[in-house]
Image: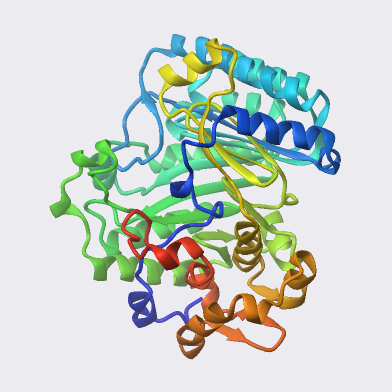
Length: 459
């Protein structure tokens, strides 16, 4: 990892999509609604895809306190009684899916996100998992994960999560520095996280992830070095390292962050460079797009064996699958469609009260979208692409179809980030850190719209 120079990091400090979907969510349209989504569900029920396993995402929007950096869809409240009505609406939404899909379909991936999923009580979590278990067959060995706010769990709560079948935990840490925590309104002592991780290991969780953010107010390369030292000593199985994007016009909580306290761009580049070096020295492998993992982690094994996939939740060890998304604002994928639920709790509940699935926008993919999705996701997950595989799948001549794109790869090839040959494209070891830049070349929507300010930084 250390061969990635700060000069190259500075050159590639651009904006672009994260490609958890293609086309990206900003391309979804309101013309796609619940009737289109129902049609996609029914096509799965009657088609060959029925035999394949599903993924399920459940969005729990509630948080007890506001983190100023947050860009997620959330409802800040200390009124835990609000969870019960929400669970009832989730049950209605799930029942509508089963009505259109049929019962007993196989589920190989489950993720609870938010918000704060651990806002739910033990009994509420049991109720939610029982509800899911009645509707789907959860396969042994599936990827069952939950996002955890360390401030909301104890050893006893972790034991309940293990009992419910969760195999992977993701702890939101962001930074261990107390001054940074105060600046973003998220106080959590490092000792608390260390104790929880130790307890999770004793309970037998297969993988523990830690989320970090660089570029937060009052951070410096030196302060972040201390956090990196603590994280590598903690030795989680995975680390997700994100760059903070300050967009107060889009995300109201960020208006509470003082822009003058944010580290300058050179400091952010230094933080990233030192992070890459620290994780390499600690024995972590760079899996891709902000993610690091220990060599024995399932995600590393999937990457090596060409089995790693990418969906709305990010990288996954499970096969590429249709994704059902439950809850406010959640995004799903069904066949050749994407769909997104209503973003406000009021509209979400109102649509379900009408007996309708709460889908308010989405997209039915064109043939060109499907071709480009295949190319982009293959590059994002495998780092290489054989032209013949795309040609056989879609009956095209790759070199003709993507003539301008192959030409546009020339600058990246000159930088040593990608190799283009007669039979395929190979992202180099150095280029893997900037794979989004390679994928962006094949994004037809970006080619016609160069306004990338709505996207996060590439690094």
